[in-house]
Image (cartoon, rainbow, N blue to C red; front, side):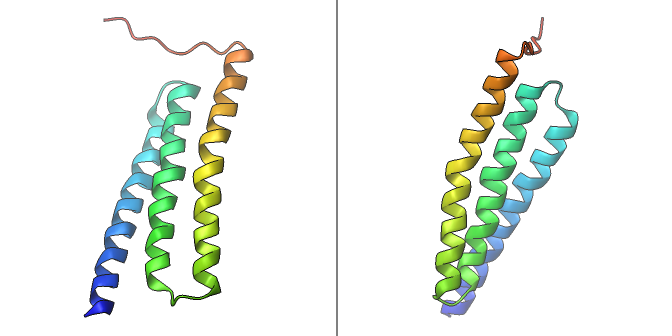
Length: 103
């Protein structure tokens, strides 16, 4: 019974992560400027890869591999928003103007 619960949770995490990864990839291709593309890539990185890594944590036996996966997940959650902010800040300082929509 426990293995079935872990398998269901894993598939939910994998499907959710895949949804965010595909949606973010489409967003990176279709969005108009660097700032909106950064938002899409940040969501892809944080949510997509985060959910996939969480699904992998549920599939491995409790061991050193679990600790490594959790450390990668922690590093991803910390570094992705910081790097996205740094690139957006550099783009603003470099003179890139955000696209504005006029109704």
